Image 1 (cartoon, rainbow, N blue to C red):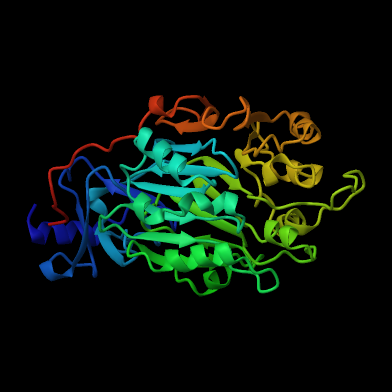
Image 2 (spheres, rainbow, N blue to C red):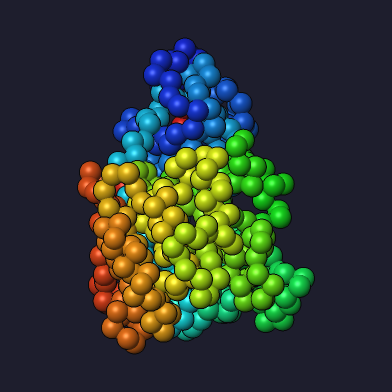
Length: 421
């Protein structure tokens, strides 16, 4: 295709406009990929920002403009891509795996989608975390984002050897975590954060107060404290930050309770599946009854958001708050999270059998499918794997042996860079 013809196609092929934000990927007629440019023109080789390889995806930033899609490159730069060489990716096409790892204490999970890995918490054993990731072949994808949801060591100590885990390649990694509490100093946590900031591979360190100024974060009009955060390196993921790590309104004066309710809470929507990560938030004080009780603390804050924006908390898969402790998972909270169709999958990242029978009964009452990461006592035996393959439903199940886990899907090979011209 000549440059003149390509320009004509990209100027007038405006039919088939799509929603304001969607995923696009190269068509079969562009096996060498599609170039992303800084302006709607194919006449200048100097305006090429990025080449989208065949089999990979980008997120659009708006509708078609004269045959060009406004898109976001993996490094966050905005550009234009020729619509004639792209097709819209359907939600059912997106393949991914989410693994909830059976660690000695705390919790850990890893998301593999496209060419990217996102690690959520690390438990409290850095050697075991690294072993699990290597044994399952999960470090093949670049680790582009690490999220620490809680200041407690059982959520971040697995990252204490972060430099060794990330390796020496040139890929940059973002780190999100709760900010320190001036009323409850934790020297070990502050030392971990300070050391992570100085690692060459860590490009950005974000906490709750910074999201309002992040160019990739857009708050909800009805809930200004809720942010949709764009992940240019993982366009398949829609991340909604529901609670950014500041202590919840009305939190107890006890430092442990304050830290629990300062957890990062967020939802990941991948294709047609939605995962809600709640960390260690609570909903009531110890010893108080759940009957005729209005949830407060972290769960109360989330329920107030739900009142303003119905469906905000609805999920297909939930990490049960605070490892299944009775001060969390209030009936009102479970009711809001449960999907309108199908069964809720409740994953209990239990620590030392912390999950209480009364909590499990609340989920069973809502006909939830329950998985636990402490079923067989010793850690390392009860990983939970959620897999989504093209054309199939989301499938969650227990996995006892990480060496037998299916590797993340491998994209089709591409011949090399090409583009609109």
